[in-house]
Amino acid sequence: MTTKTTETLVSQSGKVKLNASPRGWSILFMCLVAYFISGALNTDGLNIFVSALSSERGWARSDMLVWSTYGGWIGLICAYYFGEITSRFQKGAQWVMVGSLVVSAIAFYFYGNSDNYTIYAICVMACSAMSLGYSFVAVNVIQTNWFPKKKGLALGISTMGFPICTMIFPAIAHNLIHAVGLEGMFTVVALFVALFAVVAFLFCNSSPEEVGQYPDNEKVSQEQYAKDKQEIATYQSPWTVRKLAREKVFWCANIGLGLMWMVTVAIVSQLVARLVGAGYERGAAIGMLSIMGFFGIFGSYLWGWIDQKVGTRNAGLLYCTWYAIALVLLIFMANEIVIYLAVFMVGVSVGGIGNLMPSMTGTIFGRKDFAAANKLASPIQSGIRSCAFLFVAMSLKITGDLTGAYIGLIGICVLSFLLISQVKPINEQ
Image (cartoon, rainbow, N blue to C red; front, top):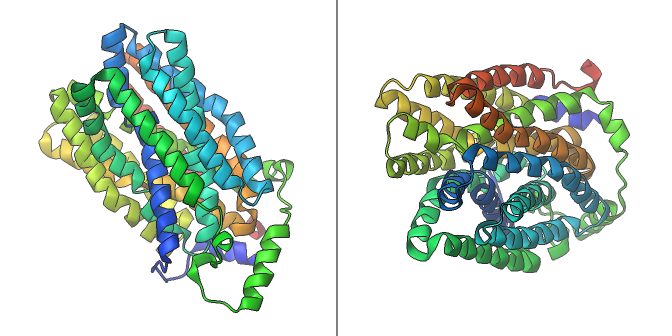
């Protein structure tokens, strides 16, 4: 690993201003929408989809949840090949984004428009697996290419898509069901995803060089621009899968942050159920989810700012600590003050993990080697994340409520803290 990479592992520069061009801002907005869609189809939306389909079709809720986990495991293979495409082809990230969105749109339509349980299970798995393409592998490569030096701030803005989804999508889905019926809601959302796939095909470029711009919107000479563009086009990363697999820093970073992604999904996907169990009406619980998403919008930028200011590793350690405290509050929901504080803390954290994971990979490996490292990092993180649904389902079967799951998740936060604390420069290993 180069000296430059070693230096950036510990801390970022003190500059915390994002200087994006209009095209750069449009790229960030499209990435934000991709994150929103992922949350809608695979995390926040489960608060609505699972309960509605369970009531409509008579399927067991705990059995329905596990298919998202299985889809995530299938996604391990998909993520690897998505990563291969992004690392081998200059426009690979755009191809992956568009293709996975199209498949997701088709799968989501049949997700809610078929009363066959087997088709339902296949579509849930397809949505879960494909989300790794458009909301993880592709957008992370795209943003690292466009903002290699200011990735923390860029991700802090784009990952607002996750908490925005948390804030508004459950209510949107709930209202759509009342307006156009359960099947109609799935159809409307599928059409939106398909339309966004067309937008991504037309405008979401894999790198700034494709449209005559320079990373981080920096101004350079024509000679320097031509030289760097040629270097990027011909660069072959030395980071093979075998070499990555032998790197301690790689495993500590990706397992540690993958576990925190699992914690996030486990909490958010079942927060409405937790609040209903605490005595809230379902409508009020969905409203609390919206409040949490509102806090998360600010939290996304906050974690990006912290990342840029103190470094990705230190931001990751703070993130683990913050979530552990939030889980304690979720266990002891003694009064409304505690409940609102828990919702606030979880909300602030929702967008953080989507920021920290690609930022850590970019910090360790840099722009040129990001795609090569990401093709293994993505499957590892995603596979761990997918265990959230199985973890919650098993907890519900064993204990009958979510308290046992929250206790286990606190232990996972501690383990993640220990792993991330071991992410040190290569020459210190």
